[in-house]
Image (cartoon, rainbow, N blue to C red; front, side, top):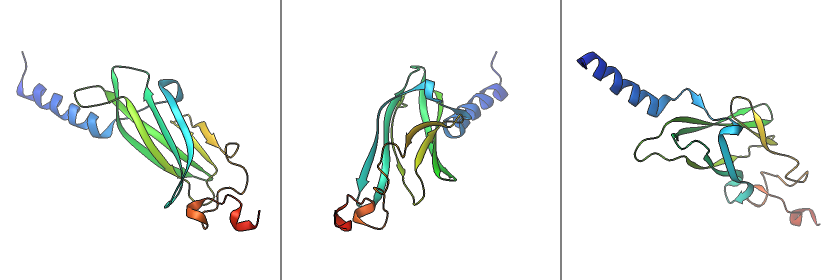
Length: 137
């Protein structure tokens, strides 16, 4: 028999899970369909697109933090429910000095300076990208 307390606990758990999921997807939990360097007028970003590999889970939130010379992307996940999706699309702004993007608590590398030739990222020219035109190349 359900008590009022159990009902309130269930409601609180559902609301908390939707906004504060402690579960973070790792590289083995997702399939990236694209991880691309994109030059935008506001600056350079790494655009990440993909889906969770578990049909019973959905994306709750995406957090981007900066640690030393890397950006760290974490996708918080929770149980799937109506209106929730396992697909994601997010941009990681490439601030000056950032040369790699890591994913999850295990900090797996999903993008790094091997993808962009040295000197390509110049946040002070051409919307964040220097294609060699401003250097007389």
